[in-house]
Length: 465
Image (cartoon, rainbow, N blue to C red; front, side, top):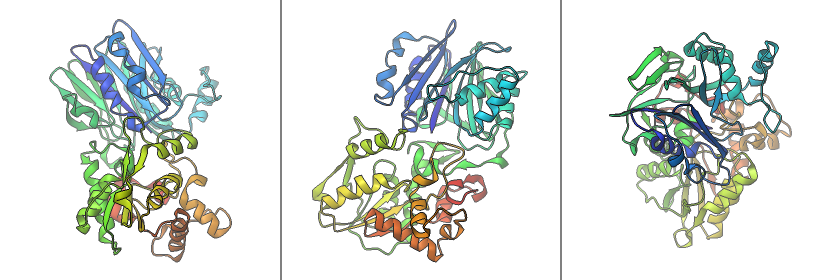
């Protein structure tokens, strides 16, 4: 995943740009970048895998100056922001999403004379592909529309032109959000509204799918209307990836997580001494579960937040496992001889849950462990964002392979929670995790907790369409 932020101010914007971008750190841990416009574009890009954004970019607070800027934090290796020359003038671009046909589009552009810079792994930077498509348009609005029409996957973009105007375009199907925040002297745009509050911005609107807005020192306006009927916003934003203090399309993330926890509790008959949530994203689910059941909410595991971020964002499994192991500390006196319901946002691979969470709880002499994920079993790797990476990594697919003795294409019976095969799959995962019981959230309960119609949220990871 990635997070993007932009600001146009009547005064120097660098402090807001720095902190606004930093408030997207939960969305990526690979690279980050800032571009500020003063007399010219000034760009900073760094790898942040071994150091947090603030440590890498704190010098920009004194070294960069300008009234307009855009920033990005990403979980992939593609460098951005990029600065591009075009017939419309120079512009900077950041992208949130995943262009799955980037190589195909790049080949078509190369046949028309365009050249691309290879990354160190030999691949083409999809942000550069997006920039080249946009640069061919008669203007930025046309170019962004062309991008939406030509790519597969998803793309929300911010463009900062040489005149200090930001063009904000939300993905054609709204899979990722973009919101505008206003303060007396500045206008900002962000993929996570948690970036606004402490900087004094009020969220005034969410862009519609395919909408393009222009932001300047004089205000903001819609230059291309979106289509709300196209909305296919990623459900995983509420369940896991977005920050609890964010709001996606007008729906608070933390409240959705509490409703998910309540839904889990209403279908559960297990007796427990207390409920908990795997820090941090499982906490809201656990609070909802405890409130619905009328049992205490306690913290058997606490996260050491000063040094360790999310174990989900790093690219390598080794680094993800290392962070998961180091960040969670068990409190033995709260765990010993207790029957514990552990709410988790999801079970993707299951390795961290098994090797870190469950192992630490049993090691502290828990009596029973009941795992309650807030979403159904993940069946398909995401083709729109970098949420899940491959079929073979998914715990549910490993279970199916073990049960079937091979990979199978038709997993419809395993998706149906009423089927025998679904029960067998869940039992296999429970046994593999080594927990007392395992019960997943039902898809309809999850959608109801989000509060949007089922046809307005992307559920690809769970059902394949």
